[in-house]
Image 1 (cartoon, rainbow, N blue to C red):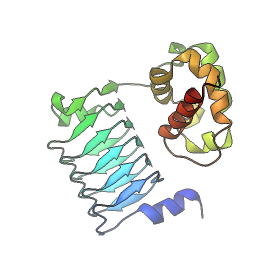
Image 2 (image 1 turned 30 degrees about the vertical axis):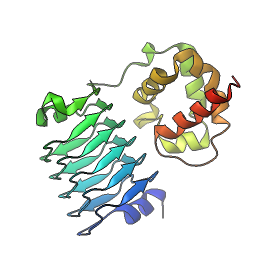
Image 3 (image 1 turned 90 degrees about the vertical axis):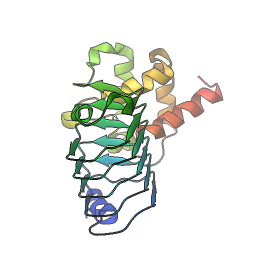
Length: 219
């Protein structure tokens, strides 16, 4: 049984009441939930890659620091839901309810139908992209370091720096650049990689490791 198969079993709900549950640092990749109650749930630094939610009650659900890529929310009730510090890419919100939902400090790529559903005041410090930024917008030295790190087992398995067909996830890289700066990343990413010793699922893990390196003053 593959990791994705286990995820589908562990985090896929059918006609189930999972309200108020807290999912911290979980891997929901490829999981499918149908007609279930996920109201007041917290998804904290959880990966939702290829995840499908169909006919689910997700009122007041909270998504914090999540990677939401290629996900489907079909006829879900997301009223009063909050998306904070999330990367939302190539995801579909099909006939979802969004009354009083908020997107705060998010990056939204190729999921522009969200702007059709919601008034502008639902988006706070949230940026929309039609396509991923070009690699040419980053320093060559940084791209070299990042591409080397993508061979690191835990980083490679996490998919946070990868897209389909081996492409670099330039939105994740943009988030790192905004916090740490390109020249600093060139210096500290190799050292940070030495501290990654377990599987992880969202960019927040790399960010926390980088902060530890910065705070140690060792670079």
